[in-house]
Amino acid sequence: MKSILTQKNQLQFMMEQKHRNLALRVCIFNCLLILTIGYTQGQSRAIGTLPLIDKGNAIVDFNENLNHTPAFDRIEKIYSNLVNARGDFRYPVPELFLLDQEAHAAYIDYATNHIILEKKAYDICDRYGDPAIAFLLGHELTHYYEKHAWRSAYAKENNDLDIGKSLSEMVDGVANETEADYLGGFLAYTAGYGMFEKSDSIIQNLYKAYQLDEKMPGYPNLQDRMTLCKRSTEKLGLLVDAFDLGNNLAATGKFSLAYKVYAYILHYFQSRELYNNLGVFATINAMELFHPDSLKFKYVSELDIKFQGSRNTDVPIKTQINNILDQAIGHFNAAINLDPDYVPAYLNKANAYALKQEWSKARYFLNEEASPKAMASPEKYKKTLEDIKILQAIIEFYSGNVDVAKMTLESMSNTNPLAKLNLSALNGEKINKSILKKVKNSNDQIDGMTLDSFFIDRKFDVDKVVEITNDIVFFQNKPFR
Image 1 (tube, one colour):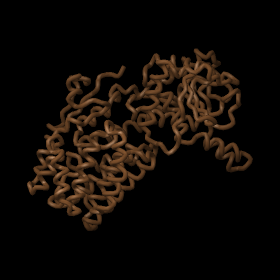
Image 2: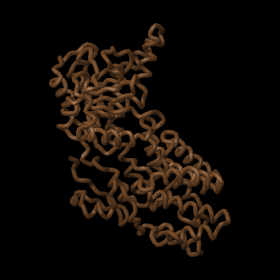
Image 3: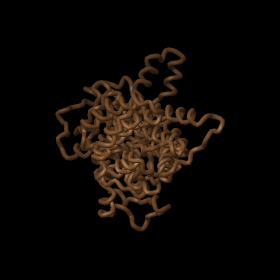
Image 4: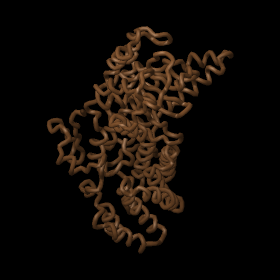
């Protein structure tokens, strides 16, 4: 998902669904049993998951490095999208290599922290397009993020104990691959590559291209691996359906239900965007509990669709609000823990503290965290920098610096509709909430595209547009090639 939910739900929804509608229903990675560790310089595998294939002792020759080729540029872009979709930068991101060798198809070497894709495997995936490449790389990244190698190593180191034997049974290669299959598939899906349903064909073609027997020591036979593909697809499909349901609920303003769906997904898959948007949903919930006249300004993380949250009449409203905002702050902290440079989470955290009227904390996370990080990449965070200024003005107003707040909003009012609305509120004019739905921010972009350019380029199927209300319209992207 994209980082911060804004007022432009139509653009947000249709662009974040990029490539999903054509969604090749992924029979993802269980079949791929891709290796995770230890095939350097003829070294035998000591720990890790099963390799995709194994042609015996292999020597990795980096003289066959193809990282200077257009093919590598292509897979590097896909790899970068997968890494950013996960948004977990607590550990070094493995370096990617494309090698001209025939040994294991794709694997991760923990000794060097390299992920290696072989050219022959790339050529086979190329027949199916970017989703197949994302499928392969997503699987390897999942091994890394889920620490499968550590689990396997721990089990083997303690294999002389009863618990070690149990661990070996629990974290055997197939179990690790199963998890990497559907979570790697989900990672590719959230990165915008849809679902890939032809992994059984890929595994079959790899066996043929690498001239492998249908039965290899230590592996399920080929037919069983292809069956595992289908079973992984079913499991992945449930997670993807939940993800799409959460997106649809959010797009139609059912944020309390969307929150519950996202919370379910977090049991299986964690990313900074999921945590951030959970926090936004909780913030909206809290804002709905405020008395209509108590919110003088329009805050930057508020959406333009009314939140239909439940109220607990046995608990004082102020206590409910603070409890929900604390929950939101917890989600923003989780997003920041995954990526300490994730600007939207700092902005939303400051916004939550402002709603709690904890002005010093709001000012700190806005001025000392969000602002300098956004200013380091001004083109990337152009919209976020404007939101930061608006929230700064709100904080200054409530801190008694009315002139500073007014000056800030006046400087933006000609180009930023939200600043103009808040300037009117500061001047004592009552904001007509109904006009907020008509406000359009021409600066909003997703994947470098504005709403206007999206319509001009007609990158959607005109026969499959569904209008829910005047303000909520769903678009289906044209098939991804």
